[in-house]
Length: 431
Image 1 (cartoon, rainbow, N blue to C red):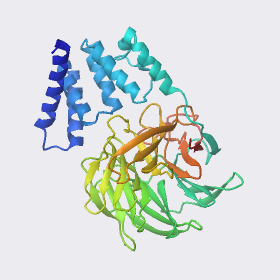
Image 2 (tube, rainbow, N blue to C red):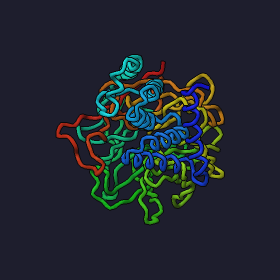
Image 3 (cartoon, rainbow, N blue to C red):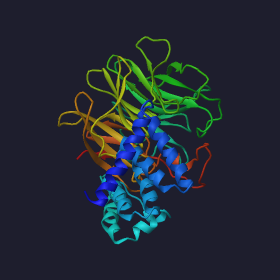
Image 4 (cartoon, rainbow, N blue to C red):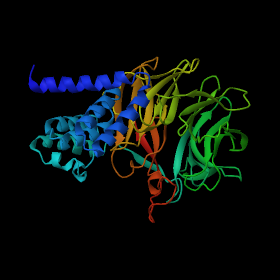
């Protein structure tokens, strides 16, 4: 055994011991604790302790771009350039990009001769991919446009700030579908229930939501699919804690599911039900986003913004990570929708806005939705594909909302720029 091999195995063993020592914790809780402890160790000058904890965190979620960069910073500062470059190589192999020379802690690594192949890969990853083209601009510059849904004669697009829904027409124009009343909050993800003749919309108000001056509240809005009339409102149960419903899907049996990105919960409204109920409050999801019901209707796949894809058993509520994702960066996945495509398995269209470059992915899962069997970048890079929100599939491709408007506001909902861009509905052909 070489000295380098022994050192590597020793670090891996230390990382595993840290995980084992915290066995009563869930995976996400361990991950968050280890990253927090690593940050504290770094501030205290304990680089060895920070490295061990970050290695343990990476063992929990091996395809975490953010953890790889943190580990590279620590190993670079600790005088371990080979180990740090290996982290950056893995980061690039995951398809990530970015000007690492702008990071003071990583800049010394970018000057090393061994960084050249990493730099080439990062540059290739940043190059625009796919052939997205603009369908329409749904509204004025400065507004946030979030959700999109396919209907027989066009696309419906929802707005957070305008609190409205517009519809594309065959002649390439827009027409109003829903105009807000006094009760309407900001509008987020949408789902079409064709059998029930309804459009379901996630609705929320409160601090931090741009354009919202109302007290915090959230729920589902049920609209007539034929003319946009309000059919019903279903508020989320008030337990005194913050919640924000952000995405919606409808199961074949008519059950409506909604994800709570703030309260890390999933809600459902059963057919004929009078009220929303929280049926999963997961300690393994930090911020659940888009959802898709798998064929057969017994399983829900949920994109968590921190930890990737989760498989939820709809009978028991059991939450397990989708397998086969160790080599695919799925952190930052926001939108998730069914993608009709040949080739077997279950295909999903995913928008990913928490990484660089932001991407539109085609994901192939096994028929039971237990395992990721493939991931393909349909589009990434370029100005219009920055600031992505949600997407939907239809016809020979999918649409996504680019330049959605979120980047023009800070975490408190305040405008950041006097010259915001207008959002764009982009069509992405399938190869």
